[in-house]
Structures are given as C-alpha cells and as structure tokens.
Image 1 (cartoon, helix red, strand yellow):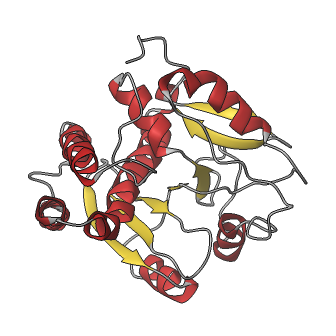
Image 2 (image 1 turned 180 degrees about the horizontal axis):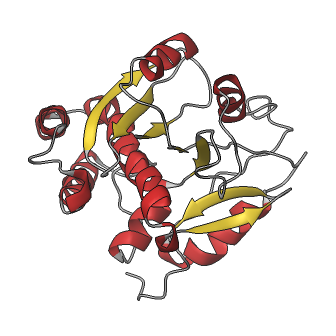
Length: 246
C-alpha cells in the first residue's frame, strides 16, 4: 500500500493522512496533529508501505535561500501561478524539517529510485504542481486560503478539486473501498459556510492527492519527474508542462 501525508511543519497544526492499496484505490484517510497520533495512524495500517508521498520538505541541505528543487519546480510551473515556499536551515522549523525526522523515525529512504529495495520510499510532492500537470490546468486551483480570496472562490475551487480527484479511476472514490470515507469529506466541503470549515477538511483531501502521487510513483514513474537532486532537495511532480496557461 502507499500513503500520502499533507504534513504540517509543526506539531500543533493539522496533518492530513491517506492510504491507497496496491491498485491505487483509497482505503482510508484522517486528520492528526501530534507525532504520536501520526505514528499511531501509520501503525494501524493493514499492510507494509511502498511509497510515502509527503507534502512538506524532506531534504533541506541549504543554510539560506531556496533549494535547487524549488528553483527548478518554479521554473517549470511559475507561468501557471505556481511557486514554492522557500525552505532553508535558517528557519528553525526546517532545522531539521519535520519530514526528515519522520522519515528517519520510520526507516524510510529518501532515495526516490529505491523502490523495491526493501524499505519504504519517501518522496516530497507538491499538490498545486501535481494538479496543474496531471489535469492541464491553466492556473493554480484557488481552493486554499490566501489574502483577498473570498469564501465563494474557495468553495468553487474545492468543488473543482473534488471533481478532478473523482475523475481518477484508480482512486475509486465513488465506488471503491474508501468511498464512504470520501463521501464524508465531500459532505464537509458542501456544508462549509465559513473558511474554517474548509480548512478542517483541506489537509485530508490534499493527503488523498498525495496518496495518489505515491501510488503513481510506484506504478507509473514515467508520469512524474524528480526536480532537484542530491544536495538540492528533491520534489516529485509531473514533467514540465507545455499546455497554455489560463
């Protein structure tokens, strides 16, 4: 099985987690906060892990500035309004990054190409870039909170996100083993009347996308690309898009 984690940078904010089976079908998802809750959720999974896709920095080798992976990804996706948060060791929450500590604690390798070598593989992913690349979106999907982005815009963005994820047959969101889990998330989105209502479900939905990327890296690695490299940080996302921007 494969796991997606929308990892908070610290242990006081929500982290979304989701698991898919070897065929890519959603099994379960949840929201956790502390390291203990995250470890307990992982320990409760019914099988060994293959790939773990994490939306948070895993490798931060640089003392200051941007990582090479961030520069490469922004070069590929910046024209679609998609840029990266800068991670460096001068920021206490990245020295070390929580993702690196998590991978070390669980014995996950950070070598993206080490699938099948006997240890789970952890890869860093970026949902905004993944959505643009997988679905040929002309702009970043506006579902996340941002200055001057109103609730109606975010609700529309979430509706589009739900439809896009439901269009992926591998996830089986409407008729697979995790369909009830997914229906709960969709109901929460549709019932939202305040920004906080959306924020409560956002991490969990992002984790479902991350889990799909984990499965994709294991089953169809040619559909993704490693941006960066040793000493630069590494982020796995679709290859540089060439479709028109919106």
